[in-house]
Length: 221
Length: 235
Figure 1 (cartoon, rainbow over the protein chains, first blue to last red):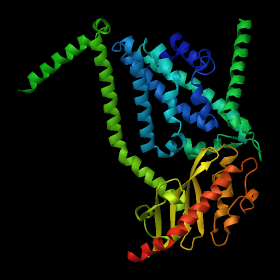
Figure 2 (figure 1 turned 180 degrees about the horizontal axis):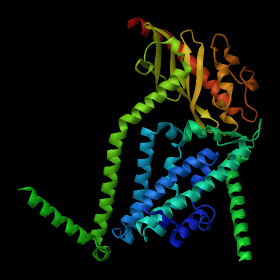
Figure 3 (figure 1 turned 180 degrees about the vertical axis):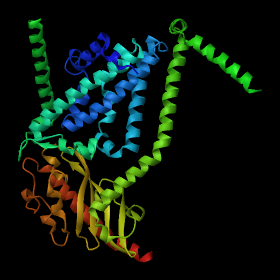
Figure 4 (figure 1 turned 135 degrees about the vertical axis):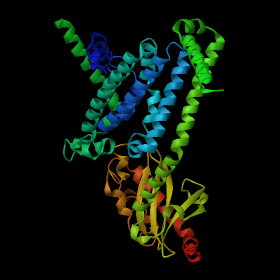
């Protein structure tokens, strides 16, 4: 497999779109429901992000392969059907074979269905493009989403409980225990940031910061 | 029929499908109603088949995992040295509609050593937590003293009410060794209500409801104590 294709202008464009220019959360302001529900800790954000990447890549790939088969009049029901089936598959497979992980993520996996960004990518990208760019787009969009989830989760976790990546060893295995940090010792906690409204406020700061960066970059150019 | 003819037939069919799958052919088909119906039905069928197969493959494994989970939970509240039987399969189902434990029937897991009941444990619910039902499991020894209580699931406020979890606070351990005999009925309450159990700063309702639910659990055991202890003698 020739990986140099990933550095061609087209693929670079897709990566840049997913990570920054057209980021699911920061620019498109999609996927806020799972985002706010899950990002109480950085670990939860990471786990949810990984599960979302898997579903995004799979749904983009399947839709792109079948894009000539699907009439535009009934595309939405088919997409929803596909995504719901995929999420259910991921859910029961995790429950059976990665049960410890499912105990951590179990509550959140059904929430992936509520992630309109997946439907959004399928509709606006995969249904019009070749399979390979579609897979890459699903992956990069998922990575962009995961990054925001982890950053927001870390901000909320540090300010609400004073720890970082708590329980990471449950999600990723014992060898990742070193990630579990106590940032502020004997911290009394700040309840607001643990609750969804606090997450919403912090998300506002993140979006504002991204806009500031973009404005500065524009002025330079 | 020999292999040769089957192969040619198969190749012919494959070629037909290939022609049918050409983007130009599909483009003509797509606006037609019967084609759309077929495609939607096809996708639904494939999805249903996939999910059905996945369910068949995983059902037993998941059942096993859930049993392991339940067993681990029960063993947290019943010390291993108190029983030599399999808790999961030595059970009595009792009516509990009047005990206000959140269910009309409660499965009581019996901890037996050499056939004699040493203790029991059961799951119960505090239906009136601050943010919804709080699901608990409790182990009680044969004299009615608490061996241990754990919270299985809850939706209380993170950072305040979630101190009922063992991973967040040792509060739930303060019930160990307590019974209806060594703590009077009035004392089964949080300190704010003149009881002996701590509440949390900023959260009184959650611990109050947990304390009351545990008291109801103990009363449920007391009401059925004779019957439960008698089950050991039969076997």
